[in-house]
Amino acid sequence: MVYIGSWKFWVIVALALGTLACAGRAERRERREQAREERRELAEQRRAERQEALERKRAERAQAQQQATEAPRQAEPAPAPTRQTAAASFAPVAVPVAAAAVAEDASSSKVIFMRVSKQASGTDAMLFDVTDAGGPKFIGTVGAATKLSYPLSAGLYTFMVVGETAEFMQANIAGGKTYYALVIPKAGAKRYAIEPVRNNEIGGKEFASWDRGTRPASGGSQAYNAADAAEKRSRHWPEWVKKSAGERAELTINTEDGR
Image (cartoon, rainbow, N blue to C red):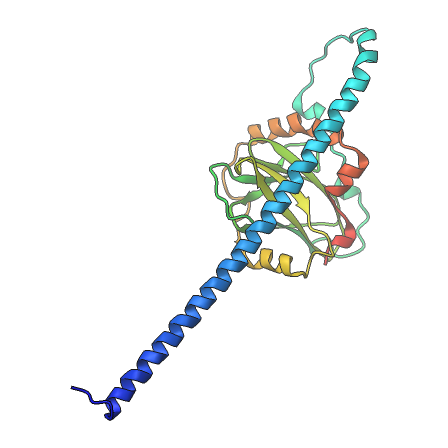
């Protein structure tokens, strides 16, 4: 039996209080981590909602333009049908990088693609460089909460993200800078949007949580379906071409967006 006046009793009491204090700190730390995760998920959800709203507006504008031009076109004689290959139908807006004047070190730039959401799916987000009219150049796959770094020379580029569909983003790259883009899942993480991260977002608390919450993904060593990527580029590229200059500007990385 241990008496209250015994030193053993007070040692036991001290150990018990220390254990309770450690448990309390661990619980508070867990709650803080959970709150940060909830804020990060909420920010990702809001960005996805903004993207969906933007897509709806674009679809409405495109439908209105089509209806406005449909009546005059019906009066025109139908042209003779011509067969067009996928390669012929794709004409990238981005000029070949070799044509750009590069003042700085051509190998010192990179774009980091970040998929912040932890929502997993059976359809991965596959990234391609489609600057040239040849076959899409596979960059890699970004899964949930991962990021992928793509080194490149200075110039004007066009990137494509492929899920069940394909969407595009352009980038004006300057030498010696690092740029960022968000890969955003939508429609149950089976389709993806790709958006620039602006310079004024880099360094903020939200960006810091994105960077801290994503781990590096592997590059272009995975298997992929080249024919499927080429077909989706050919099928969805006209959607990019139909966008207004303002809409394309929203989906273009500017030279000053790097750091």
